[in-house]
Length: 121
Length: 121
DNA sequence: TCAAATGTACGATGTCTGTCGTAATTGCAA
DNA sequence: TTGCAATTACGACAGACATCGTACATTTGA
Image (cartoon, rainbow over all chains, first blue to last red; front, side, top):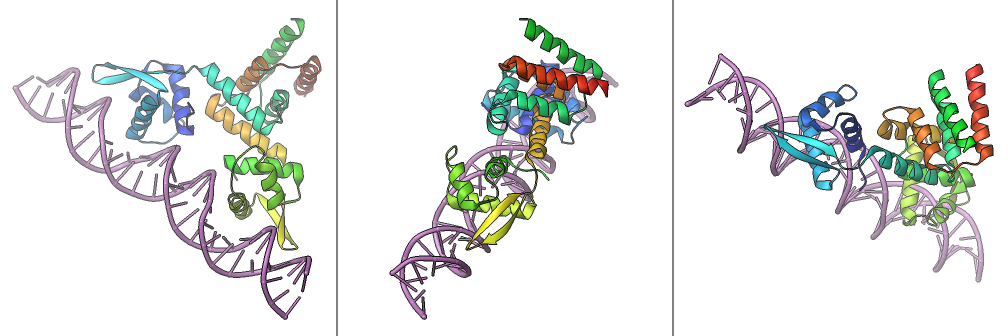
């Protein structure tokens, strides 16, 4: 059930666009990354075999849909990362993430808002 | 200067023990993971070439020290995770981490405090 | 209708990663 | 000093990954 780096990039695109054709995914993908069309195609074919995505024919093309949902995947990877590299402390990861990345005021406000809701409850 | 998954596991052990010999690192490593001694040795030799660690001879063994600190590496891991799973948004990761894990009030306070410092500045 | 355009299928390849076997080396104890 | 146990050095290997070239299939519009 684990996806490779390249597969995750595709999943990311797919989660935003789905359902989507290889062409659509590829065009979006090369905004960030350089690769040939057949590379993306092959990648998605492999993902189909792995059960990461499904597809249906539509005209001459195939239309793909992700079979794992984004939040589930994100939750799993966070758990794995926290266990392996942050001594099991998710908060340690959060602090590190806040420290190492630029965040806009509005983003920080969102987090603060979230924290308030947490505490009240 | 990117480390692989296996290299990060070794670094993790090294940070706790350093300075440490291959034997010491390996013994600690196999508590969690199964691998041969020469595998760990080779890994650390490669890491030496990559400049991830340094070493000095001590008796017949070598004593290794990490050349990147833990925070740096954790930052690297977060960056990679964010890129692969969170569309490059560290905030998205933070929210997910906060949502999926229990956090004590004091931990939440720490984060709130941190946020305040951030905003002021 | 049929040829160009578009898409899929399939196989080949180079690289990276992790793994380990074996040989060479070293320090130490007897 | 010498043999043994522990360590390092070297190289090879399989499998995973990412990439792409080329052949085949399908749609469509002139």
